[in-house]
Every structure is written in structure tokens, then in C-alpha cells.
Image 1 (spheres, rainbow, N blue to C red):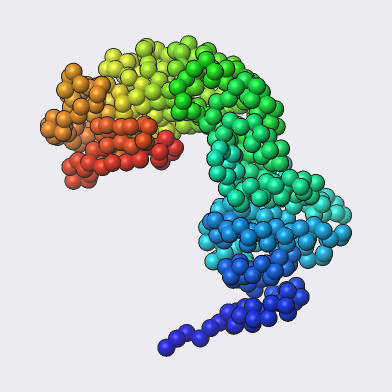
Image 2 (tube, one colour):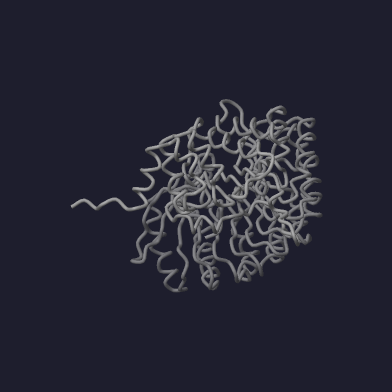
Length: 484
């Protein structure tokens, strides 16, 4: 027997059957019904009704990005047309509640959960400086309408929805604020950067990704915008092009501006030639939670500076990759500086030897809060690996560890080529199982036998509960995020 339709379903179908009537009667509908009706209208693409629905929206926030991942452009234009009709009114109607159009996908299933759950996201966490109410007046109602979308500036074919949104917002800057919590710049085009950043409210940007290196003139233009990103929390700078004298100018141009960002918590840098500018950048930074440096040709003197600045004293996540360590002392001093706060630590492909690891092991043992440890890509012997596992077993919070296969698993002359021999690992693996049983450990132990940073893949031997090793291929992208 078929379940009879609910009263809400019948009411929605009744409204949809007479679109001309529904548009004039929307304001009299129960607020709970409007959210369900909006879903159906948007799904069916009824653009005229959609314009009216936007004007009658009963909540401060319309989470459109949670309704559909890739909105149809024409349907999206109808939503903006509805906002235009609101903005065209000389006086705000008494039922005008809409303050924020959120185009991100930050609240999964919110439309299924319904009106009451949606009412709890009435104002998004985008700006540090929020509008506040004052006695006798509602200052928040006088604020421009806010539109939120994570933006990507890139070469080639542009996202049609983003392009239309930028053009629409540019013409309405006085009454609409376009906010972007996450901004990715994948282009070196000055005109594209200026067109986008000239529209976006810069203090709304909390996460910035820059993956292109430009001429000094372009950098100087960009830093004019960077200086206004006062609420930036996470900055990532990387490139896949070979280092050259052109990108060596990047740090000293951009570094001074990073030092002014007092809310910065995470700094990720990849494949940039710093030429002794790390101290200049870090000297004025606020305390960081996350620092990630890879392929940066970091001088050992700069590594020593890392242990002297206040910005690293509260560091929780440290990721060093492809930074060859010639001496252990600078790294030991830095780890000693952050041992009390570190929760995740990655020392990947740093070519750390037996002697260097032995020098830093006592300091590693002091990282009492460590939950995640990654050490693959370093050339150590079986005896040293066993010693490392013994020390790490004493860390009560450690839950996961990535370790290199010992040199005994490779042909001596071919270690650099990663010529791993599974047959040799069979014997080594049995010994490691016994070592782990002897020391006792709560961590998930995985041995990395090969890796490719270009394709973000690695081969792992994972120890199961029954003491056997299982071979898997995994994505390194997840490992770079570090936290368990």
C-alpha cells in the first residue's frame, strides 16, 4: 500500500499548481513551508517564483551552496535577480530577513534537516569583526547584503558561475559585499588578480593559496591587497616550476606583509628559494599552530633561527619535507624548542642518517603530546629503526607512525633508486614485529617502501593486529594535512 502524501507535500503541490497566485501569497505562507517550497522550486527551475522566494526568505542566511553543489547558471541568475528586486526597494520591507547568501557547501544535509536547523546558521563565521546591535537600533540591518563563495583565480576557461558573480557584485559594491573565506590564486595574470581582488572584501579571506610566481612588479601589486587581508589565518605558497632567480625575489617582497598578519596561524611553503629570508618573515609573525616547509633549500642557520622566535613557541604541527639535514644540532635545537606543544611531526625525505637520528632521539622522546609521526624517506639501518620504534613507544599519545624501510631492505648500491626487495623485507618485517611486541605500542605502525611526491602516492606495509604486514598504495595528500 502506498503511503499517502503528507499535508506539507499537498500544500507545496497546490502552490506550484498556480504560480501567479503563489508569488503574491508567499509572504502569508508559514516559514517552515517556505524552505521546503524553495527546494522544489529550485529543483524545477521555476525562475519567476524563485525571484519571489528570495524576497520572502524568512531567515538571515540562505545556504544555497548546500542545496546544490554546481548550480545551474540560469537558475542562479534568478536568485541574484531576486536580490536585485530587494535592493531596488527604497525601504526595506518588514519581512526582509535575508542578510547572507552563502554559496559554500559548509552545512551538509541542512536542507533535509529543515527550517529549525537552518535557523541556527543565521550568521556565518567569515569575518572577525561582526556587525553588532546597538541600543534603539539594529545596526546589522544597515549592513550591505553579504554573498559568500570560495574563489579560484586561474588561467584558461573560467567558472561561469564565479565569473557572473564577480561581474554582478562589481556593479553593486555599495550594497553588496562579496566575501571569500578561501581564495586560491593559480594565475599570474595581473588583470585577473586585480579584477577579482578589487571586488572581494579582503578582510573576509582566512585561507590563501598562491601557486604562481610572478615578476616583481606583479608581486608588488599583489602585496597591496595582501596587506588588507587582516584576518588571514592560513597562507600557502608553492610552485612546481624549477627555482630560479625570478622566484628568489618572492620572499623579500611578500615576507614583510606576512609579518603584519596578526591572525596568521598556519604557514605552508613549497619549492621556494628563500636565500636567508626566513628570519625576516618569522621575526614579526604571531604564534603559529602549523608550519610546513618543503623543498625550500633552507639554510641550517635559518633552521636555528626557528628555535629563537616567539612564533614557533606554541607550534602544534610541524612538517619538514625534502630539506636535507647536514648536521643534527640545528634540528635538535628546534625540536627541543617545540617539544612540549607538538602534536604532529613530519620529517620526510630529509636524508637523516643513523648518526643524526641518534643525536635527536632524546629530544624526540620529550615530545609527550605527539599523536602523529612521519619519518619516511630517510636512510637508516635496521638497528636504528628498532631504536627509534623503542623510543616512540614511550609516547603515550602517539597513535600513528610512518617509518622508512631500513637499508637492509634495499640493494646497497641502489638505495637512492628505491630498489626495494620484498624478499629482504620478509625477514626484516618478522624482526620488527617482535621488536614492537617487546616494547609494546599503541600506535598504528606503517613502513613506507617507496613514494612519489609528484603524484602524491606511496607504498606502505601496514602492521595488522594479528602481526602480519599488508601492502597498500595510499595517497600522500592526506598525510600532508598531518593531524590525525
